[in-house]
Length: 195
Length: 308
Image (cartoon, rainbow over all chains, first blue to last red):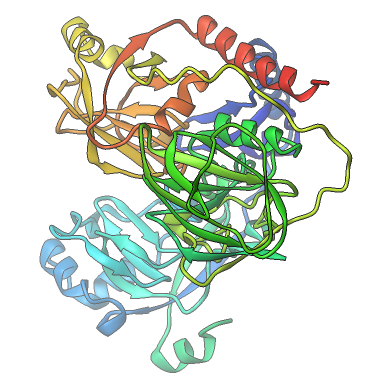
């Protein structure tokens, strides 16, 4: 909420804004003054508290779970003692808040996963995880926006592109959104690919 | 008209002063590793200091000019020949159509810059032309230049006087000044003593994303994991092994290692010149001093812009 306010009411002395769970970091331009930016931030905090909290959009992410799209489902089942149907049920019945995007390009930090499906990271990270892969790492679940290396347990994949590199502001998943996963079958996956 | 890349060097990329304003999408600013040298290079050829230049790492490559050009090389001195003749650094030089500039290995630091009148005509991705190698975005097709590439030369019509500089930059890379980081209290006095008194060696694990240092490991008294928060350029993070990492221009925008310190803005250009095997010491200063040094460096650059 504060990040949103700051993005809408920025200062020419602020170069970059790095939101996270419970912090917002800003960097200052070469000519900028720490005291002026601090003052701007203090004023912005008060103003943001008075203002209305923007409601996050509800975003549905279709996911083809298990099989070749979710090669680590077996591992997650072993680590949790649940069967695939139960993991899918618990994963797709929760609402996830997008706290922020960060780390690498377009990566959304989702909060709200059912802890009963938590599973530690893979011992050996993959050199390349396909874009759209949905995974579990510890208490967190996430979606890989772009193909990248990674050590999360992959349980499925969405055919949709969640990050729009050409226009990040038009991305499907954004800070503050409420995400839900919807299980789909192969036919629907194929029909949605590239949309 | 363009420059033809006959040989790309180790990692030669189009760079500018950074793609700012998109870190909240996880896109770090990138930009030249040594922005001071890029800015001076641009001023030497009469460009605004923000134009795109070619950043070369450890060894430069071979480039043929298909058009007359006015160019300058800045940063660390590499072995350079123009059609077999020696070629100066930190000076604007006219190049004739057909000439070949051959840039071999470095004689001191990690990077040098090729700037030319008009800059490189490269389409912007979001707010900048800088290449972000790790994510394959920006610059020339998101990658380092390679044999056969054509680098288009831009135009800059405004009449402006190229700069002539006499004194050279501070190239003492043995001292990198820092301010204390957000988790500085996680490290006790003996860890801080070790951190600021030892010489660190830059490891082979050195990239535009970060530089891993080797030395006596230092340990935090509160563990090695924090709740993920923002990482600025120059953050000195200490992961479990105790060897610090300096986050660099293509850094991750957030992360979970404790940050003991942060390299001051005015010394970031030195980090861009460190190469594997180099040794240096960290020197702790206050944030007020760091701000003064940043503003001083900035006013130095601004003063160069208004020369006769």
